[in-house]
Length: 432
Image 1 (cartoon, rainbow, N blue to C red):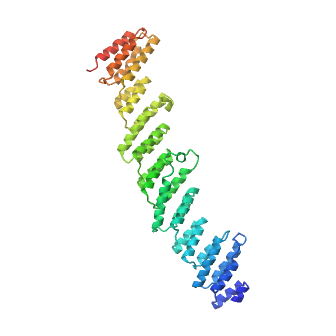
Image 2: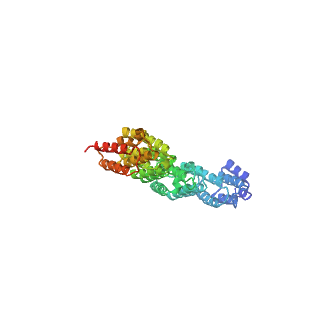
Image 3: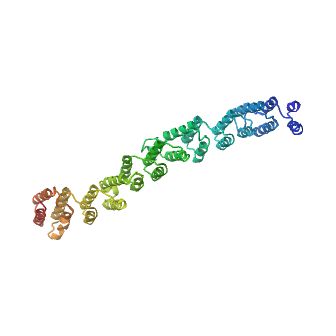
């Protein structure tokens, strides 16, 4: 065997093994392996070196001494540059590596992104990634935006019973989930990055892998809501239904207010299911309606657009407050839209306030005076709101009297006395 080895005659060495059962001693194996090791595993030398190493392993003796030779040789291979993966797999397949050598090999494959090879080692030899390496790889994967497939491969490499890894995963989930700040440019998509897609993908991978940390899940829901976007809000609902995520109702109300301010009303029906109970959701809807009702016509486009939008919101959610509908009836009267005003009064018990009534009467009186109308029919719009106000409103008599006083001081016009008489008659019929 020594003679064949010195002549680098693999054919002769193989015949000695096949005919007489003679194999390489540990010393001979070491000599042959180190002779076969190239300075680097570049593509033009790697195949030749690989073949020589494979033949050397076929000829070795399976004893402890040879095992340590193979382990030492693996360390040399791992330090070489180039495409050494095939040779490393060959050494793993020899089944002569110690546990430490297998762990080094596992880390080697992980560092090169060869997760399939790393998983094969784990499954065959029960060697798994440690918590420190797991953290490093996941942080790198998150920062570089690795695919869900790559994340799943990394997560497949740890021992599910390893408490250190379990704690590490929970900490990573918590750290990622709580960054960045709510409504930050990254979450709102203002910096043209795919931050939220990467954020959502990473957290989904950990959650689907069984990592449990309620604080992180709740934080992720808050970030999802902070996107003020369809994708984020749909994910927030998934977190709520699949992982029992919860969010402070006050924060959800903030999101609804922001949706109103940004004129993204379609988001309201995506936010409302995120409340933990119907009472909180109803209060938030009413708050949003009140906020929306106070917006000027320019927010919607014009009065017609405002009316259409507000009517839809009332009908869609079927809940309201007197503050909201009273604001709407005031808007309708200010635009002489008595048909809608009467509808609001009839359907929602909305009522006009005395100050708006007074201002409307004076505005219409000024219009009738300016146009010089003489027919009483032209006073219909002036008197129309009188049936839209509660007659027992304590401020009503003073409002009517203030209107009468100001009309009496106006420059004379044909229907002036008619207006004054009708207002006094109305006031005299008020209760009390």
